[in-house]
Image 1 (tube, chains in turn green, yellow):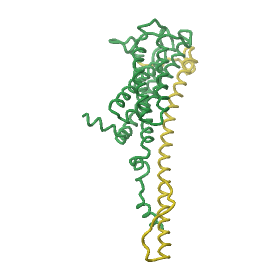
Image 2 (cartoon, one colour; image 1 turned 180 degrees about the vertical axis):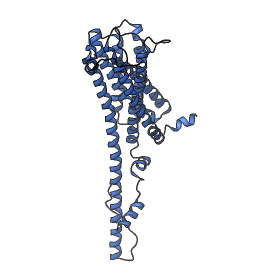
Image 3 (cartoon, chains in turn cyan, green; image 1 turned 120 degrees about the horizontal axis):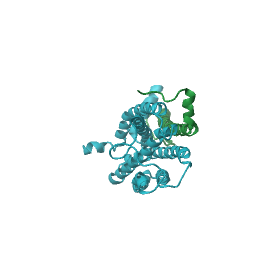
Image 4 (cartoon, chains in turn blue, green; image 1 turned 45 degrees about the horizontal axis):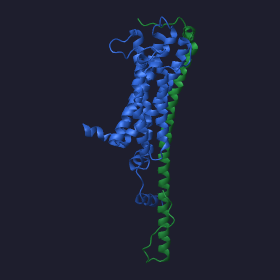
Length: 260
Length: 95
């Protein structure tokens, strides 16, 4: 089992796995995003206090939750990369970082556009919002630290340490609504026990979360494949896969003779 | 059971008076997600094209080198049919 998992550390094997998974993620992402958004926008009942503005929840909550989820995934990859020296783990780390950053940005943007009509302000420096903003900066920090190094193994280690240290921010975001007084409401669906949301509203939300998760997986896989090829550009397996075998002098001379 | 919550399409676009906030959020989200996806796919295409280009270039160079080698050999054979050593190719391009 352990050995089997370890075999995926090889770039060729990881690339193969990405190829297998990519279309599944794409299919799940597209269908559940369409179903979830249409259901949420048109068919979920109105909120009795917030009217139709609550429909922003169908992108705000999935993007916020999965921004944190993607960060944890990135930090785990960083840990694996640092401890077991997997090159592919660092590749995954840097593949998911921009996607997580985009998710964080979406959650902040939609939160702002939800906050304006409900709270009367675009932005407020309270615990939840500020810690989410720090999450965005952590993502940007990991990306820029990685791109600052010429040697990508070194870059992976440096950015990985930053990613791991930044994990401390995740529980801070989650519990910020309990630890501090804040405008932001408390947890709705991640509460232990019964979620405090009507099932007619909850179902499309869960579908949207699934769709966002699959979307993150999809884009991450595409980026991971890019990263693998870029890093292994001069290895024979890449040439074999994307341009036929590496041509040796013997083959070339055979070709040339054939042409004459 | 499940029914459309709005009386008309214009009602739907109005979003109970919150049209600006709701649609701005959704449109921004759409563009962000489409952007990161398309960027990744474009990069992927470029990388693959690059690999193929590089391979085609290497092939051209190798074929050229082999051609030259054959020509040199023929030339040398014409000059001195008994001299078969020294088939060194000078001025090799780097792949």
